[in-house]
Length: 194
Image 1 (tube, rainbow, N blue to C red):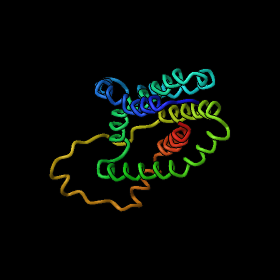
Image 2: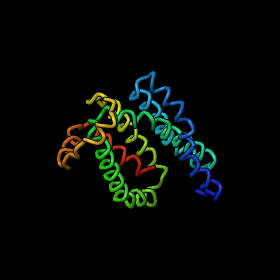
Image 3: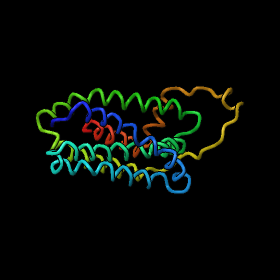
């Protein structure tokens, strides 16, 4: 593709640039529906990969697409964290989030060689638009999430008296939320293409 060291440096910066806007989105999420706003931002960001065949000839245009993608991918992060507070009960949330992260990381490690092979043998010109479609599907599944548990404020005494639930109880809680499991699977598949 012809990316220089400067382009690669800018790419790394893009991955963090969206975090500068998170204080604004944290305020937006206090007034508007977290799921709807996050979904639309992700759809916009994931849509830029449809343009890959048209911008691949110009590394600067492709870098602009990557910048838009990474900004849109990271801007909704405060909403995602707030939403997790509604998806899982207080006493399980931290451990469930850690299991979800471990599962996502393991899947990424398993899928990375497949994604690399696809990019090398099929070409990013075809792979990235396909990943864009998978990203849209993941966003659509995310848009259908249902809030299960209300957020309850905790006190210091609650933190000291909480009993750790058994692993099977946490896994049951994760697997009971089918739409979240599908969203995670599709998001991992989308992430492998990007």
